[in-house]
Length: 225
Image (tube, rainbow, N blue to C red; front, side, top):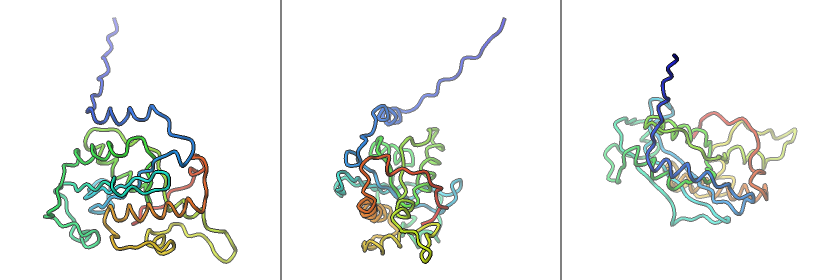
């Protein structure tokens, strides 16, 4: 007689089930019919194993309009701290900001992001940091489609024998190109806002009608700020 062990069914929290339920509904085909969630993370460093997210900033863009009132900014409690990176993002170890546990922060972000397309500058890093946090909390990876403003920007540039495209472009370069204020640069929400404005400018140049026109297979750049 053969005996088979019954596979253990993974039990996920209700908020994760609510999040995955969103993906049963297909995204609108037209670009204007979609809501984009533009995000940025401030972290203690670039190491996906050792470093942690300090803050997640996100803002929604619908019908070419940035919804400032619907922005999200979550500060995260943690034990790991890097004084050198603090000089960049300005988040102090003993901040007066209300801080949430990593799991609570993930729950808030997933409820905000839903099944929308996530947009970021060098977005693969932000997604990797969020996925690392999800894994630490026993949850699967994000299911959302993503767009990288760095890669999209390269598509707006003309190829010539004189001017060659760089491998990657920083957010500062995009801000300067599109004359975007850098007043709140290196804060999660501030960088998300700069990215959202740059994304609008890029879309204006590319003029995509359908969502699929924004997605083109390209090699993501190395992680950068």
